[in-house]
Each structure stands twice: as structure tokens, then as C-alpha cells.
Image (cartoon, rainbow, N blue to C red; front, side):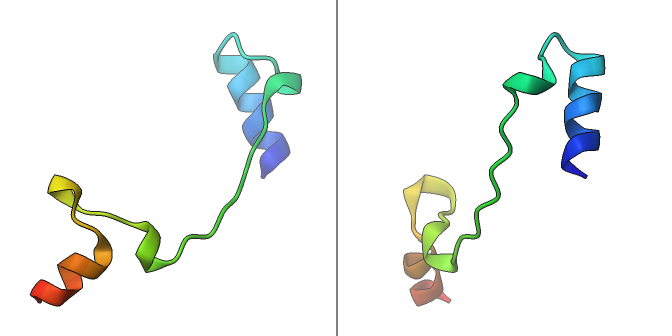
Length: 47
């Protein structure tokens, strides 16, 4: 998947595949926010 993504980006943009770095990061609910800068925790307290 990552190789194909890099090849497609290189083919369709001026970005070289050697210059691409893919980072996969998993975030928990506490890392998310909603509109007006309210955090996930603040939003859950309203519900």
C-alpha cells in the first residue's frame, strides 16, 4: 500500500517518492476536538 501510494504521488505530482514519509499514528478520543475549540471530554460532559 505504501509503495503504491508513493508511486502514485510521484506520478501525479512533482513530489519524488524518495521525499515522501508516511506516518501512521493512533489517537485516543482525548486527542480529538470539536468546533469552537471544545475538547472531546468537554463535549461528552454536555451529552
